[in-house]
Image (cartoon, rainbow over all chains, first blue to last red; front, top):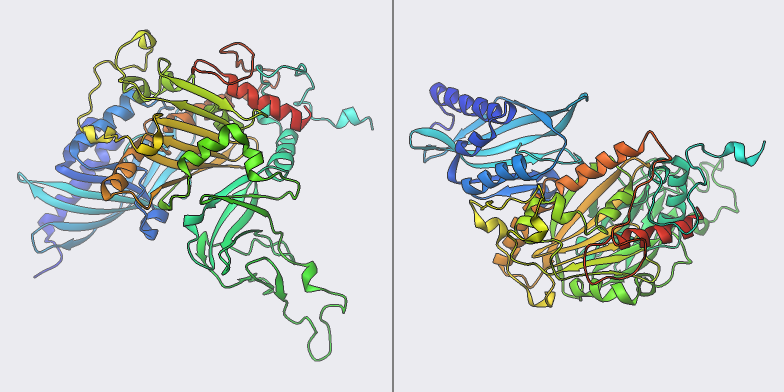
Length: 160
Length: 416
């Protein structure tokens, strides 16, 4: 079996990432959970914990419903200095699974720009994703964001 | 030169004696004051947090961390004892250990290969006797004069503290009889299991984070999740305790049902109709060892906060880096006896805490904004006068008494 997806599937996956970045950059946060399966998993984890097999995540969401709670919490309950985020997502490295789903490894960097301030780097790392087809559309069944950034510049409010 | 001329213009001696409720901005921004804090608190006769024994389970296991700005290594000797050594080669001052964790039989500085054992004793130096009869160290060079700085160590029920000073009292005396039982409530000898780390750099003075956890005023106002879901608010059964010096403290409280009440009147962060789409985010199961209180936040001056907030447990280490910033290192843990469900629950509830936490990310934000407010006017003073100006334990949480207690101690030690 061919382990690399064909060009049509590649293009579709690229569109998914473009949409993902757009949701978080524009932002259209309330649309972000819709890019996941209902039982989708989202984790933002320091590389240190990931490497050592330690379970603690900076953000750990185990359902689309919980992702909605995160978006509500970030937008309506967490006081913070306002900022823009800008995701730059690399071309994905892809592996086709036997069931037709795709494992993707994708580098990312997120710039943060606060009002009246220079742009700085909020977070840099890699997405380890499991992408499946649900009701005809590609969705993330799992997104594990493992970040290199040793120190978070104060806080992370919105998903990466 | 008149000594007065050398004094920093931003550290006026304008703080009236006996006042602990109006803290001048220079206490948070002045470089000389900050250096004195490092010398007297972090390098003086105080116990600083280093880590958990669970982080160094085996002989030779080590962890690198900091006390104040000085790099230290916590290492387990083959005897089982825990040693804390300064990460500074006696030869050229190199911070020879760059790994954060690891396992070692000895420590060798890569620069000139001076080698130390796990107790910090210098074992040997290359070319000590010269090469072909030339060079080498003088005859009177003694290995025992050139060991690593070895800190005094206290281990209590799996938690490791260290001090650069030989004059530090016993850890038990240091914490004192009021706070120690609350330390032992969490750390009662049960074996701890490491869950992982979070690290953030908060651009504010290190004391602001201790104040944040000595301030029961803000949680029910700043933190929507606390007031809405009754995790911390002014109408709860609460106790504020401090040690005799006022340096350490506990904020203890018992959760109520939340919802609308007098204390939510006009509170803009309260969300009457907030419902979770996924209630497992707040899946809380009371544990027998709590003995009632659902939250106990302990500040052990100067370096650590010990958190029990429902089922989520952490140590939060404060590593100052200049007057204007500190690194805040969270170490989450559970107990060996935890069921897999409890293990998962502790990790899930960590969504509330840490640099991205629903009730913690904003603490970092407000600390940064306070620091921003201090910078340009050293004569500005904060007002910590909720519950008047008295200093003492309370049976309610509508008080800033713990902050005043800390500054009474701070002024005494700093002689400012």
